[in-house]
Image (cartoon, rainbow, N blue to C red; front, side):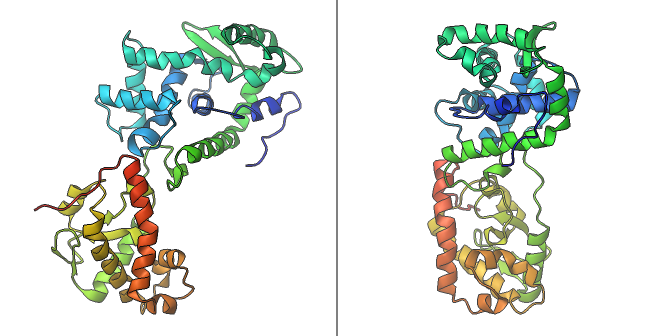
Length: 372
């Protein structure tokens, strides 16, 4: 990660150290919420409750949709999961719908709103700790928040070390970004967001070891790019005619199939061809995001994948085989063509089987078998 942009008038080193020694995700999502609010509203005054709502939205998709763990000490992820149980929101609800629901809940005196507001008892203040590290050294914990509030008022107009924001009441409790800092954040929104996300990914990787593509699981699910997969299987159908669904035994033609991620897309967050096979649409809908029974379906899956690759090794569209070259370490189409089935199968199993176990540990339903 590159260093933050420097400024002659601001203590950038304080901002650069905000994520040192974090034990939960609060600071990451607090800062992302500030940056997001500045980008959306273009105002230096931001109500604290609106920032807390954005924090919950920030963890909504990682926890509810992609099932990432935030660690046992992290209340932010727990609140997101609890909110999913107590509202009509779904794991893939639109971001704006989630924000509106949370903001409405924060107006009510109910347990879930109290849980959300409790986040505001610490993170807005402790986020600023690097700005007052020497003054807070040895300070009793119960005095820290009050001390930081006092120091922010004094340092807000400081010429040497202005703090990032201060606490005000603007119809409701809010923060006010210091003018020079506000200009800096606006100017470098993209770099600062990347800085925060880079540190957040590092934090989540430690709590989700071996989980693939964590950086793709931080936001609302994007539209899947299946153009290459569609081209690949269209070419396979052109070469072999009909194919048999590994789950249902139904015959499939070029005009009647959908694409299934053997390992659920919600887990892998990629569209690599070695994880995608054709299935009838009704079968695909039945399987959804469940892990198929590995003992029942892996060998038919491997055989279908091998058949598909072999059928295209004589075609001119060698770019369609790039995912397989990466997985099997082959350098040419000839190498793929000459790869014995058993080696192909074993290598595919070595890649997929551990991911099956990881997905199972994350709570993905497993053991799916198609029933007519």
